[in-house]
Image 1: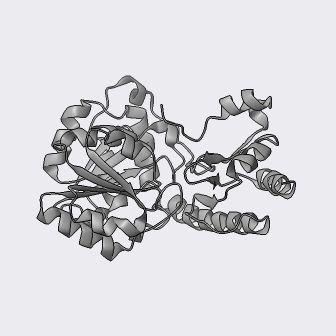
Image 2: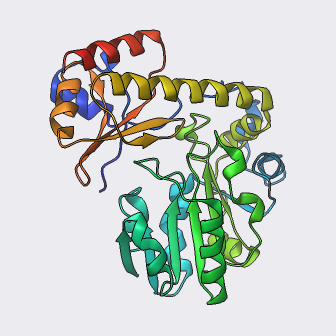
Length: 323
């Protein structure tokens, strides 16, 4: 089983700090989630229906109707590799570990960014997270499109996981889906803070969506999750305000880390990445103070999510000051 952020109960037991006394910065999930509306009783009583408005809301929000709702983008990550014959797959290192894990039946190369271009020339699949998790690395749009064109000319494909791109919607490749060899994954877990709903979308050509739907089976997303997601995707005022607040908070977090000697790295609107050889020690010393970060060993670094309120900001600042 791969390690993920959000393992708060495990940390509480290990460090002997009650669950309610932690500041959990170990995930890239918006700490101020979309306010879930009350749901009609029939949403809980009926089987999910595909004419409930979710697909229309998603098409309007993301910019393409070429979509398939799935039980979080994780469901697509696990099933996508089986939709293609065994081949040569190139991905970035480091990246979200579930991606390379899912493609183990293929010939996989995990490479640093500067080696991607040369490797794509002999690849069948290029798999990228944009912006990348955990280090926030980004690729130029024109480079991504050039790679897609090259791969598609040989029957290959570019798969882009855009889980952290909602704060910069103009950078998304979703409106271009329909072009041969382009697959884009989206999720409502991060920006909307609805990770527990387990809702994501695959944007791809129709034939691939049919394959995925057959493998995932009926009712892949629950009725309540569909209803909540449709409301969140349609709420433009909340989205606009959230983009502004997340961008400001991420900048604030970056400045705070810089002031306390954790400089360098990069981030997104939802997290900051700091490479450091002292990552394990800093992670432990913060955890002893009830601050949970996400530790990475290769490369050595820490990912910090956003504090949720001023009390959490103050606790993080104080804990960093004691390092």
